[in-house]
Image (cartoon, rainbow, N blue to C red):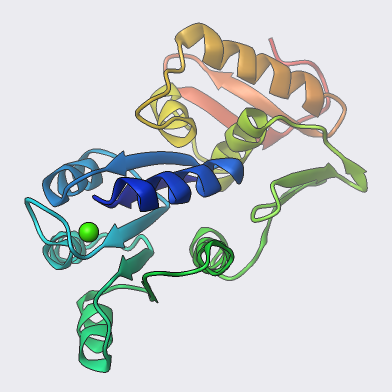
Length: 227
Ligand code: CA
């Protein structure tokens, strides 16, 4: 999943980034409110982790703008500001959850899991396509009862395709789903990841079809190799 962290405190941001990346998420880090606002307009995220006390543009304003554009991604607010009135204000602005600093990383991780589970699957922790089954929060996939051995990138690729099952996913959308700002995925790198994923899906009854000029489609197949 791709996550935006808007946090100006370097120590807190480092801890959060390390934790999210350890759980195989692609994380972008915005150090002020203006950067966060711009990133939210330019990219598609699965979750925003938002500090309220941000320079340039206050976190509340970032959130207000986000919701006024109709964006529905889940938002976890992390802030030093506490108190009932503040919590109510932030939830009313459209935050989905609220964590007061300092917090235990384990609690942060649990809340991220809960928000991602709710949003990515509408409450259902699994995606299914034919014999293929994906456990999204657990980053595991099976064909029937056989577990697939996938790298984090291959799982991300499969997830991005499976979430758009029946629709073509462009190369740009795949890169967007797989990478954060600090990473680059070359054309070659994407081709290699797709090639490896296809090999691992061989015989599963599900395949990745190339739609020339448009992108890729995950579909139930007859089991033949895809060119
Ligand atoms: Ca701050």
